[in-house]
Amino acid sequence: MNFLAHIYLSGDNDLIKIGNFMADGIRGKHFEHLPGDVQKGIVLHRGIDTFTDAHPVFRESTKRLHDHYHHYAGVIVDVFYDHFLAKNWGKYSDQDLADFAKRFYQSLHDNYEILTDRTKHMLPYMEKYNWLFSYQTIEGIERILTQMDRRTKNESKMGLSVAELRLFYDEFEKEFTVFFEDVRAYSSQKLGSL
Image (cartoon, rainbow, N blue to C red; front, side, top):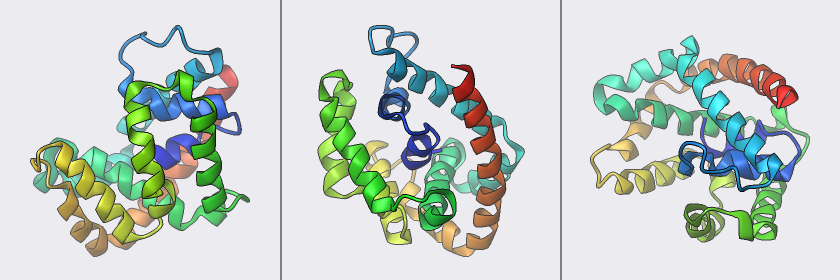
């Protein structure tokens, strides 16, 4: 799961959303100084990642990409799945996606002092290109994947993976739909136990 799904799966608590969003840049237990709900978001994020990596449907999606993108296949599928969440947003939320994104960006500004340096650096770009909203279109996904590819010094070739998205669009969407019901149930249960 990529940014949009992680934020969505955090429920309505802004601090849990922020923790879940920042979690990739936090190693080990280097988060015990953060507010309790942010810590819960980090723990939730790690649980979602473990659940996702082991899920047979997610693995089916990554297998389709593995020959060309190797260990980046999972990262690419995370972004593809965010596309299908954004595209079908009305099925999963009563809140407009543009409003959801705007509210999340505002919550990052409202809690700026607790953000990691990585998140503070990312925030202007995230807002400028409205990442969360841009996932709705294939062009938006392509831009995100190309930016991610630059961070690997173009080693990953992730920007090219949109060709597979177009070619196997229906298959990826069906897999997302099945997987997302399972990860929603898992996240809800995990949140209740934190």
